[in-house]
Image (cartoon, rainbow, N blue to C red):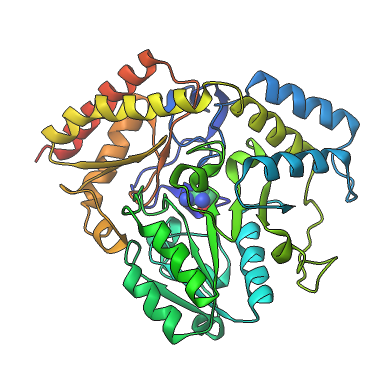
Length: 403
Ligand code: HOZ
């Protein structure tokens, strides 16, 4: 395993080893074919091997794999991101979501001159020390983050969807940043309560802290301008990943000019990376964003999300389960009422979830292998695909809940 979430530890069984992807399907080394609702944990909104993305990456590779020097292509990508993502004047390209959030928080500390970060329970912002606290995703399964104790006081945590807890931290500490997944997908999908994101914006303004949106999952998925556009709330620093690289290793963080100019080489906050802005990754990301920018894309994505939700609803009701969906992010919870925070997710029936996961895979639907994850639906799903997936998942729910 090169990343622990892939190990099937939360559901038992052995993960399939993947031979290739084909549109909305994965094919494993034993020639089993399944609908892929993981999509490489989010990047593959266009499905596997989209011909235009393949062509763009092939053309870029023919000119050279990496230069460690600026390219025209990176400037065009930066312009595209600044145009599409609300509230950012400048952007820095990096190689992973972990890097994006790590450097965004360093930038927030450099900009405010403060140390403390407020993190919400169950949100996951990659594998670096400041945020490996009360984290979702694989951390919730393995629970041994290995962070040095010396960094612990720099992070304080609060339950998601609880503004009063965040306000208490802002009053008690000199807070540099409040970091949040605007729609957490790393404890399953948890929609923010109405007014929650607006409330975080207001509290950060009141206390001089940076609001950092981790849009690694939601960016370019919930809307062209991500969760900021979807909810009409603008952050101070925005982290992007996954879709922004079209399946290749690319991520980014951006902010308004006065914040970004604190970053080296203009300012004193250091950030660097040999493969940052890699030409192949930028080519894949540019082409993916160009395709997503075509008319009707986000309407179709919403129809796909609501279409699957409607088809699953009778099965959910029949088996006493719950489900949360925002756009094309969806989680079936083995709990009768959809959770609103990490503590509630922890009360799900994890053994039943494991049975559901195994039965779904057996029936030909590849789902994220943990209750603490979101499924991601690709743009290429047809209505016939949605019918088939709902039928297979309904049968898997029946197999999982039989006593
Ligand atoms: N961020 C993803 C899990 N929620 C997948 C990345 C990984 O940990 O491998």
